[in-house]
Length: 122
Length: 336
Image: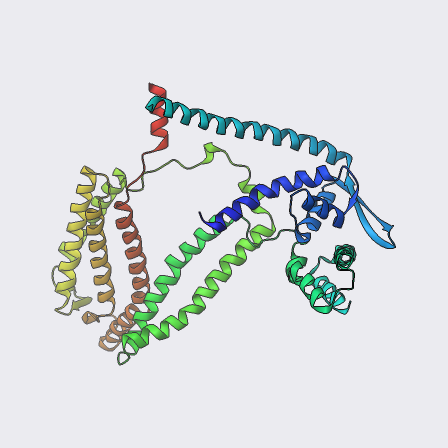
């Protein structure tokens, strides 16, 4: 298997999932560094060069809101899901689940097909 | 800390102006949070090497800043296939003919130079044509992109506006008929008018060609006859085969080269116009030869190269195996 092709396809899958994950995570207000740490701890590795531009893009699309606030004597930018973001997240999750069902059906169909092939041969 | 400031300063240079300060503040905060976490884990301050490693891990400043830029392109994906096609056409029908013609002309002017030397000189000169052609085409498409032409004009399309699907190897009957008619008219004019090198022999004008004229006479006559034969074959079997396309290429190449040769062969033996007098008639004959050599010949050479390339494409295309048409299968399934 070509490693580069795999990596490109993996990134394509991750790109879409990352947006959903960030929107979902920001139902709770967080600043960039903690958000990245939390996502990493949950198994979704994301580097700062991907996360911060994404946060800005989502904010410019009015899916997130942000504000600078002082915490532990340092100014930090806190993000949270906007009202429009909540609607978007709901729709994206529905799409995600539908896609999951489709994939399951495809995979189960293949398994069923291969089982049938085995039983016919047997 | 100096390293971090230098890093942030380097990132700042490439950031979008309107968001510079905001992005830098957030980036700075992120770096400090990461450092604090490392320091807490180690129980001491980070040394310089560790800070260098941390910053290196974040990537080159220009790459970091680039992620904050909006996606930009000179020629977008909607226009790019058209741009690439135009570039290939310009290269094929302009740069290649110019290269061939300038090589031949250079060789004619410097007969003592080897072909390799000639190719070296024209190859070096052709770069100007390549750069200008590519530059002009790119500039035009970049302007179209800037004005969002692709989105506005190519966005609204309808399957009804698409050109009919044509078999590129099919020869239309009107084309074959026109080919036959044109060549018959040519021969009806050519055979009685030019069979003898004494072209005009009236009291007021006298024009004689050199004996070598006989080669041109028979050459063009043969090309005309062969073209009529090919036209008839095309009428009976209106589809290019590789053999027939090669035959057509050979006829066209022969005819074009013969014409180029004629233009530089100083074929006029004697031209005499009573009203002009001997000296002026001779002067006119020289002027015609000069004009044929310096103006018509290079132009004819360009046309020859273009004809040759078009005919070669036809030969290549004639050998292509086309996939069965999807629509045919669809019709079949409907009729079941």
